[in-house]
Image (cartoon, rainbow, N blue to C red; front, side, top):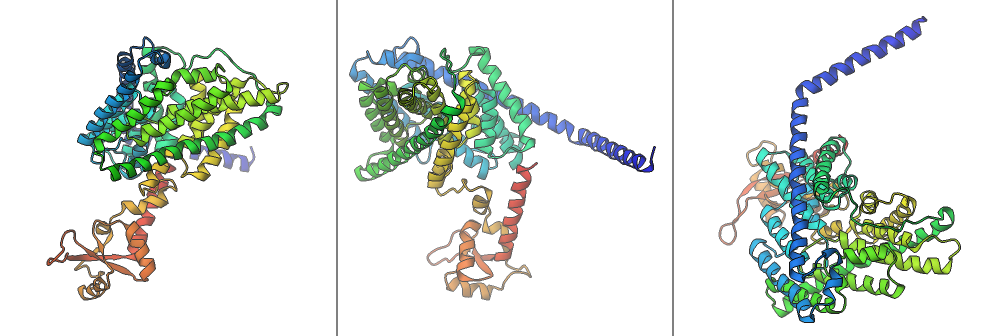
Length: 563
């Protein structure tokens, strides 16, 4: 054997021995903790799965009792025969109770949902508000049971966040562990709610954690599978939408039509999102001008929903029956357009009126209606080169939902898992990619991230945009008496010029002052004071120290996302 070959083999053997030793070291020192963590992830997945299951079954039972429906999957067929005053009274009374719950148990009478879970993952070490979260779950339960035109995924995701927060607090989890446990809970809740294990896991990674780190993948998958098993023990291995009509795609000839559908769905998604924000703004303005008590706002929205439901009972609840009608092509063109407009208005009224619920199911319904309308036109114009119009309904459903959620990967997969039809992948992928690309340029990436941006929480641009808001001046400053800190006299000069910062203020507030005033440090004042008792000078915040702290935070965030 030549000397070169022997050297190569020897080097490879040495590297293999070293790798084996590293593996053994990891198994000895970190293996038990990893196994323990995965066991906790499994338990959280089971708990979140049961929470999602009970939430869904509770809505079904209460909704059936309120509306007298034998099968709530066909709720609007039952509701259209009800007296008009009951259709108006049910959501109004439901909204009144929702308003009282939120007024009593939340500081701002606002329902917590997916956006708050994203905020908790980014800014709260994987924690969410527990008291407000439980109140929001009750409010959303009543909203969906009494005619609110939203979906159940938003409250289910936040309920899962409450469960993981409780566990994280009990085990005193750090930020990375807390975020991983939050992802586990969300994945299990989505999987249990929709019988979609792949999409549940990817939703947690893509939407909530917003990274695909390897360390988070295994426990999230374990929890997602646990949630799916719980769903299937109750409902069996069935898809959310039981469809009979498959379609065939005329691949090359028909692809431009799906590109065009993606553009239209992106615009429809933007209209849906902005309608909700517009309704929220209108609600705030009317509430202020009329001096309306905040607990009456959901009741007023419920009354408006009831008035719409008298003529269009299709808006009640998640809209399962109408979505199925769209996916099976059982609607005509004018119905699809009319139902799309009415459903968009109903969703905006529900969420603008702070009644609770999520946007995923409504976006599926609006997308299916949009896709069917487009398909009816496309197949009529070019019947010889077009597939069935239901194909467009499938693609439209995924395209609008993906643009609203800002989650093209998990939404594409969840459409397949909801329908059980994996043969339309090319059409769905094309429409989803175009709609997401368009909508993300008009809003801040997604509905949830735009919600946060409207609250001045900058998560859309990534860690570099929000990490400064997490760092406090009091934690980074040099205290008085430190030999590296400026003297009290020099700090007093800056204070007299109006250049100072409170200890509780964030570096996000300090950095623009450094740039504008071109100074090296800012005096830091203690909390309190005022009037005849000016706040005490406790230190100085240096520009260089702020930059170093920001750099360390960025490095830690990058290490977590790539570990």
